[in-house]
Image (tube, rainbow, N blue to C red; front, side, top):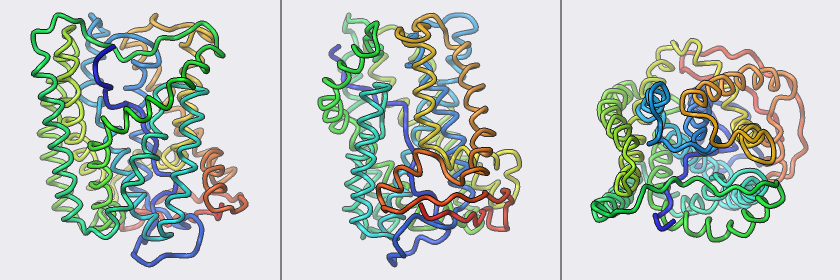
Length: 414
């Protein structure tokens, strides 16, 4: 496979949640004790959307080979989900990282990233080659260098990095037009045993992480900077103060993102090598635009206290790391040859149905788990390792919006 790696589809959200107040003063040691509703809703919605896109990788089908109802499902996925939700997660990661630095300082931030690197490494080697936690842990360290920049400077930096990366990927696609090679799939070469796959992934991990950081790093850092700019302005914590901006994001983002999604859907019907390369910048540019549009829509609903059923996604958003990892465990158990052995047998429609069913099931399960324990298992582990604090269980209050579109939900000291 000679093609450069495509920006990975999976993602993991920040582990330290949305503080109601993330000012410049370093606060008492420990995770935040109050959370805003909107960031957790965005995480929960994105978590379900990410699974829809990742099913192509879990199940082992090639998008350009889909026909009939499977092609319809693939088009829906490309227009509405592909690249959209990883962009939301990346921006939320930058938002959470900027808030953590402001609240706890650089030392805690670096400890957190060391823990994330360990978690991501284990996820990649033991479960699934599509891990992105380790990549975020490495690239995210550079957010420290932006901690003194204001929102405007962060957006200028993001624009510069993003346009540079997009120009390189577009040029690579154009240069490949006319090549006779077939399209690359990006799917892993699976062995028949669990031990064999673990050994292979362990041998590949270092090179994968280095190559992915070099190739994807500028684009990811651009998205992190956009999220950090949102943290500076309080956009997600006080959406009622930013209605004009949220309207522009909703209209402009979807106005650009949906046509680019249609272009991606077309490219994903083509078997040519160039189509695969050109799909990368189209996917990411359209994904970012639509992601901003989705943030605008949900932000306006939150500002008007009209989130309605979307509020329930806050529960799965609070357990986003645990839910993300459980998606990998369950889906590899269903499809990989050493377990359910369904690899290559499902198309886009059936995997879309499975992703929707499992993603939506995680919402009530997360709410039930939070009522019993107050935190997710992996969230507890990460925070205990970062802060060295014992866990304390409590019952999660019912989710009800205040006039700021946010809930002051007590966050236990973990």
